Each structure stands twice: as structure tokens, then as C-alpha cells.
Image (cartoon, rainbow, N blue to C red; front, top):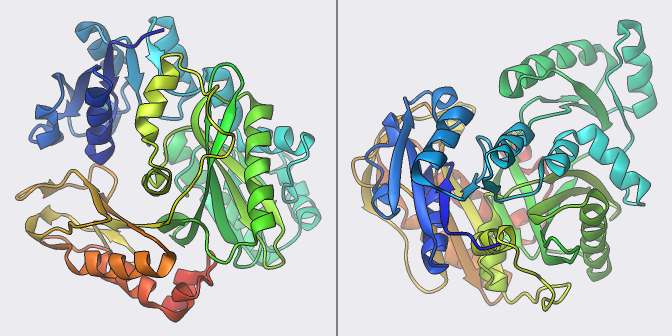
Length: 446
């Protein structure tokens, strides 16, 4: 199956990446945009552009009728969802198929399975992939404490559906449980329209490590190594790197093999990420599968020289991975820092304003994925991600030093950003030694 024209159902830096990938594959592209994004420079690079609604994302980027109408109006044969918005919505995949439009990603049955984190846990556990103790929040109110005791404290209350760190609450003691369930359910319902929750045993300050995979329609699955994603705020990532530092080579092999097993068991196709936590003793446990391109895919591209967005499009068009090695070779070390329009001093509150660019980093081994431009208005309507600074070095220390310099050169006015914070983190002695866990940021602020 050959793709001809691809509609990009997203915005910002990932929309720009997809436009670039379409150009390199000689594919026509259609960029959709809301009224708030009508001045985005990347729209000029697309073959066509279509306004799909007002700034409110529910009436634009989350509107399935608006996006399908734009695809039919322009004759697009495929839709690339990017990340966020409709990227992991199985109903959207079904609608695409019903309109004879190729969805760049897994099919809706797989999307439904991995979107149900409780069901995905059970499937991969049956295939021998380790999982933490867990159980659905019981319908009978008087069974909640009993179920929690069986799972074991500390524990997380998690949303069965959704993602992005929403609907997650840490519970250290029984008296915190009911309030956490109420709060997580409310947040999950607002984020994805479903209040289903489950309990999962929580490790103390684990490492968060994920494995990038590619899978074709013939069952061939390859992995592109692991990524360290432990530096987080509110369960959302701030800094990622590959390879994961201070990771035992045997543990690395086992993690990557488990990721391939999980993907094969689920019947996964296209690009995806299998996520794990690793405890202090070196035991790892499956968390979930992200059925889309990840924000942090860029660092895997830097060490493998594989354009993952182009591979997504090629796989959606029916290309095979037959000639690929099961483990794609990696070279050097890459680090990514997310620059968000947020105020770390005030619990990462979003920051809005008009951007004035003073300097942006460039140079050997420095990559900047961004959609910002001088005079751009940062609004409260969308995700706060402004840019991703990605660096490559022959080793981790070279990459770390290069990142510090790149962050110094990322100078903008008009909004508060996380730039100074991530610069402080990569200068921290524990980070320099590769010693980190998901509590790193909380400990730093303490």
C-alpha cells in the first residue's frame, strides 16, 4: 500500500516533524490548525492547510468530525496523529478505517488493549513479563481497604485509561486511600471521560526506563534500545537520555527482550514504547505500552540515525522490517531536555505571554525541535511544551557538558520556562554520576 497524501492531526513541533518526514518521502501533506495557531510558520511548509475550529481543543484538535472532514475535503489517504490529542483514541482509529483512511499507528483492537492499562498488564504477565502487584478498584466500597492491603503499601491509584500522568495518586498509608481514589477518579474523568481506576504497588524511588520498538505487519519487531526517563515532575518527564546510565548490560538485554515479548504478545504494529520501572535491586516491572510516537523519540533517533517519524509512515504504507536487525545498533549518548512554559518555583504553573527570542542553541551535535517564533503568543489552550533541546556526544559526559552550553544559549523573554531548572538538574552531582530515580526532583526541591 502506497501513501500519497498525509493529514497531520496535531500541532507544534511534532506537526513540523511530520511535515518534514512527508517531504523526505515525497508525500503530500495537509496541516490542520485551530484559529489560535493560524500564524504558525510550519503551516507554510505543508502542501495544504485547513482550519478545523476555534482555539478550544475539543472543538478543533480533539474534534473527530472536523479532522475527518478535512481529510475527505483534501483527499488525504492517511492521518498521522502525532502525540497527545487523538493519538491513542481507539474510536478515532475505527472512524478512520470506516472512511477508508489509513491511521498511522496500531489498529483499534490493539489500541483498545494497550489503552486499558489493567488489561494490558494481565496480557503481558501471562507471557512472562514481570508486573507489580495490582488490582482494579473494587465496586464494593467496603472492599477498597482490603484490596489495597493485598496490593501492598505504598501504592499508586491509577487511571485505567488515559495517560500523561493524569489520574495518578501516591498513597503511603491507609488513611490517605479514599481521598486519593476520589481525586484520581475526578482527574481521570476530566482527562479522558472514564473514571475507572486500579491500584498498583509502588516502588520507592524507582528508575523509569522505556524501550523503543518498531513492528511491521508481518510480525517482525525490532528495538532501538532503552531510554532513561526518571527525571519527572507530576509524573511527566522533564529530561530523558539514552543509553540509560549505570545500567547492567544483562539487565539492559532483559529489558529490551521483555519489551519485544510484550509487543509481540499484544500484536503491536508501527512505532511504540514499552515502559518499565526498575527497583534498587535491579528487578524490572512492566507499566504500560504507549501506542504512539513519544515526545522523547528524538534521542533514539540521535544514537541510531533512524528517523522514527519516517519509519511510522513507511510501516503504515506496508513496508517491511525484514532486513532490519532485531537490535538496531546505537552509537554515542544523547540527552533531551524539555523546555516548558511553566514556573518551577510555583508548582509548575503554566506561563503565558508573548515570546521574544534572544538566542537559540545550534552547533555540532545540537538539535532543537521547536515551533516557536519571535512574537509568538503562548496561550493557555494547549500543552506547555515550547521546545526540546537534544544533544549527542561520543559519551555521556560530553553530551552532558554540551547540553549545559545549549541551555545557556536558549534565551527567550516573555514567559517563564523550565530552562534554568533542567540546567540545575544536569549540573547536580547525582545526575553527573547517573544516580537517579523518579523522586529526584522532589529530593532536589527538599
